[in-house]
Length: 298
Image 1 (cartoon, rainbow, N blue to C red):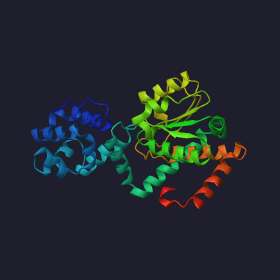
Image 2 (image 1 turned 180 degrees about the vertical axis):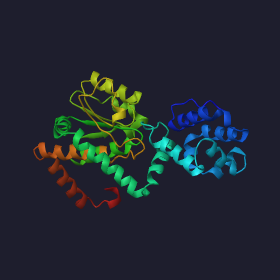
Image 3 (image 1 turned 135 degrees about the vertical axis):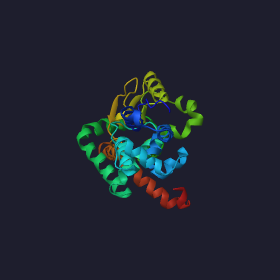
Image 4 (image 1 turned 90 degrees about the vertical axis):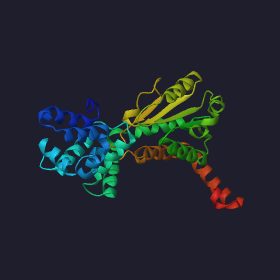
């Protein structure tokens, strides 16, 4: 049987059970536990019949294992594994584990309802963690920018593109660096004093994010960072940073929270830029009406 030592909460839970009941385990139990430890996330999602099939033992073996470990049956054992999955205290590095934990939570009240509740809870946390002064620090920095460069990778790339689109339509020369990875050195060569670099970092700050922050500082560029609580270590530190949770461990970690903050920044920018955003939006609307271009291009 494989060594169950691991930081994974399901594997830890299995390891504790194995240690307590090692003297009672049969060869079939050992084969089942090997399968469970090899893929603890899958173990928390499958029924006893499926686990037995993968272990090559009789379907009833999973039930007998559960009882030897102190449970009434396999469903109770599975519930124990699922509780370990979603109550580990930290979110998972593995995307599969994160999704599995959210599916387990969804079983309690329905998938859509679970996602909605998760988003509402995360948004409510924003009220106590982000102030109007935080929003104004971002918007006032953007208002004086010569050019704005926005960078996000992974899930944050979608938000990076949206921010760049909205700022451009509001009359601010904005570059979405995340969409120019194939020409990133050429795009970065344009960084100059008076520019603003807006970084998005979720779950962690990648080495590239830190590299961009250092390069921006060396070129006299102001750096803004919008991160979740797991992506807060950016070196050197940004001029202004908003760090807020996108959800508790095992809950949805969507873009709703950072998108709401970005929308608030852009709205506040329109409130302080002496009509620049409003004029640009009206001008773009007039252009769309008179251009004759297909709507799909606009």
